[in-house]
Length: 485
Image (tube, rainbow, N blue to C red; front, side):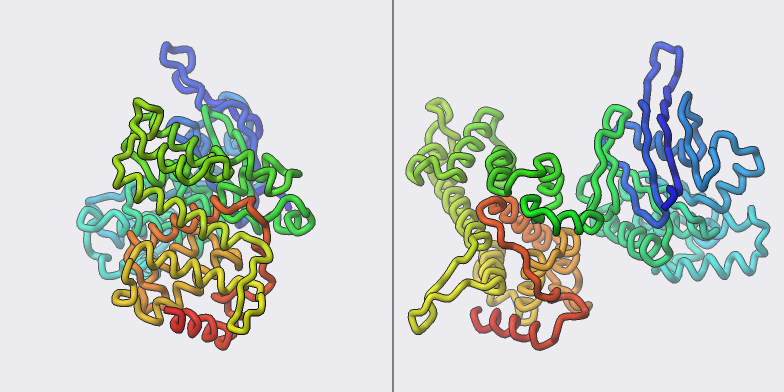
């Protein structure tokens, strides 16, 4: 397949020849293919917005080429460039860039004026888009009367009203709360990319949203430092490799590419400092750097089984001046219990060939459903305590299904969070957003913690949340959850 967009050795310098000269791009080369959702990711000042502006033709590189649909952007004549902006690309901005003296309807319809579309026709099309994005009731208002999320949906409607093939989105969620950001991202991914097959380039500095991308270009200091591809793109490679096992989280996927060829157990030793750092971030946030380092070291020893429980607790409780973390006894006991619980549940989930005795005293292999059920109750007790009063049987069964999906059926972090946060009446678990996010992060920590212990996470059963799942299978799991509760 030919690339839709290709950058070749782009170099761009701001204020060239002046005291404040700054090279924003250094020999950047990349290819973007039709119908992809690509993310430019990196910190402020890394060059991602400059690269987007060059693709849009708003900046001209000092050297290198940008080719879109087989045409070099910098060599377009005036007529070609006008057509390129009116029909080929649509732009979405962080600050919305709406005209506050115009109504919402007129803002959306504005690009149609430059195509000489009659007023009735362009307003009809604009109203259709406003209805599609759930803001038709705001059509006669001016933008400043609306929320940030609503204004950005107006910006999206304006960007696509001329039906461009390419959408350039420069930090479109930078000014939005988490709920509005999620809504905008789902419009970009589900509506525009997957349904309408538009090619989308999204600029962001927030790692939470990387899961929406088909490919991610990581940028730093004006350079593309690496490119990652999602699971679906290299699934065949994973299936053919015995040592490059499936990673439970996106972070581990990136690490596994670096250490491809090693066994999960070998990778586990290498990434142990990473696990310890995650634990430290999860449990302590107000200690100094040295105390945090001591805690990370203690956690690492605990995970490697090179420290006894007694010595581990003493390290937590011991004053900083004596080489400890310096926690008070009550806090040390609390963290000690929580760490042990997390390690136990991670071992339970990841252990291969784990058995239990049934009522007849026979040894039975613990199934994936039992592991998911155990983790479900662990999560409920962790975040609800006496959960039976707050969580209905149906909520419990839905949560159990989602946990099973996350562990064994390939449901990613974003999909899991979405299902937990989705209103109960719409088929979701119906948890409040804060609890849904906390449970999602808890599972991420457990998945990363357990990785490398023993790898037996592949399950050939059909997805429990997919259309192929049988109602009987769902009902069986739900009934077991309710019975065990």
